[in-house]
Image (tube, rainbow, N blue to C red):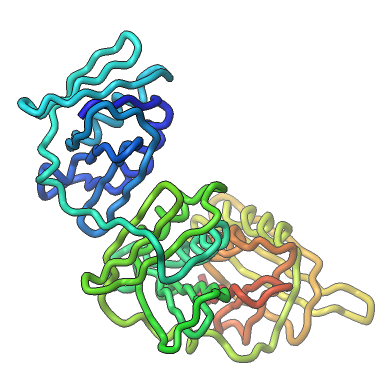
Length: 377
């Protein structure tokens, strides 16, 4: 192998695939990144056997070849090179790559490419989505997935294809986020897949404005889903198990409903969170209907600390129904509001012991359900 690439392109590519490298690999080769020449491109791949990422960068190829290099060494070296041309030359006898960039000369010992696992690559997918839409759907669901693997199925995001609707849902036992969209493809039989939230977060991170569309290849024999972007493929094994019936968690009716400006509510929650940290992030939310015709209702967010003080923020709101006094983990409200892209949101609940529901005012394609905390906290 003998090839030349630009330092900034190589560094960017390594930054993309490097996130699939296992921190403590069970096999030495899994701690490496695969480099392979392909037409006028250099293919970079990494895998931890559960997720793999492959990206292609433009290159001048003089001699075809492939090698795997230790990820940390290679990434650290390339990120510290000057922004010039990087020349890579493989010595097959010693499995070493000679790297030259400006006045820098390095030799990196690798492992034969034949020892690297086969990494899936995609093409025409079963589902095609605009990149911007998929990135938004990922952001609006992955935050609600479980971080601990006590129940492994909850560390994933359900992707459900039914008719011409794609639904993505995530839940960690304390909150639920659901996002839907219509797709051009039609599925006569419903398809349910649970994709690790970590994989989807990587896909969302990789998607740029250049990725007009993302094609998704559904699992076949190996239970692997593949996301094909313009210059990058991300493949992942699915999680085994049955995802909870999320539709049963969403309340059907509400006794209190209030409409507020998203930015105002988010700011009030962030201020309350500063003081709520000392009480397991428990903050109180008071909803007060209008006192009379023509007057606004009010929503008050209160965060308290026995040692450091308290904060109270009151917002004008359009309130329908009964007054409400409820307590939430304020971080969960902040997480939901951070991914609300609408000017105003609706908050609804059936009382202090019932879940709170937050959704955009002008759309019905996104909903977040948050379980209440004890008011005694």
